[in-house]
Image (cartoon, rainbow, N blue to C red; front, side):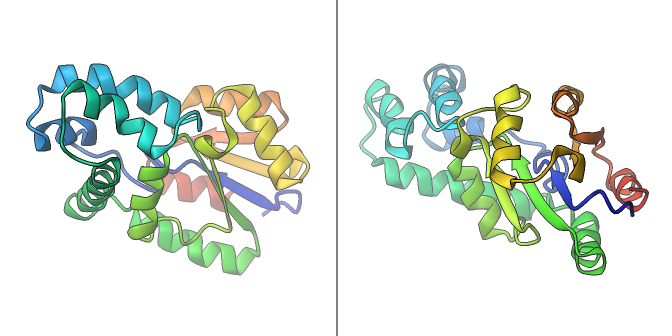
Amino acid sequence: MQNRITTLILDVGGIIRKSPPTNIHENIATHLNLNIGEFLDVFLPMLDKIRVGEVTESQLWAPVIEEFNLNISPEVLSNKYVEMHVDETNQFGLANLELLNFLKEFKEDKKIKLVAFSNTNPLKVAGMKNTGLLEVFDQLIFSHDIGFLKPDGNAFIEAIRILNESPKDLFFIDDKDANVKAAKKFGIDGAVASDPQEIIRIIKNL
């Protein structure tokens, strides 16, 4: 381990949580007995907004409730979303346990700080917290909190500001090449990977 690396930053989706075989948004539509295409046309634009903190959970569901004349509260819909996210993780074994167990030991052994850095929304975060996926991390940086999505450069500027560390002391692993390339523009070294064994190998070789 090189002394210069004090903080390891990891994406969550596709790394800590494996990609699911189903689409939770389509499942929500099915649960509500709505046409999937029509539901997504209304819901996805609002989802884009909540991922950067532009709307609240209540505002997320308002167009859906109005468009389809649903007699249901935003809170009930949010709870169902979180419930489905948890069920999806458990049913399909999406938690990357091999990597999580390695990270726990690695963090304790190397005294390194672990940071989650993800494009997501507060409902998915609630689901991940309920399944323990985020417990290994010392700090969480999410798009809906900082107002920007990777690979937007502003997302990395915010991450560096929040961490209050020199970019040369950071290492970033993401499953998307564009995100790692963006990080490198701001002096953060990184690697693209999604396979658990490959990620473990990269971390061991830092």
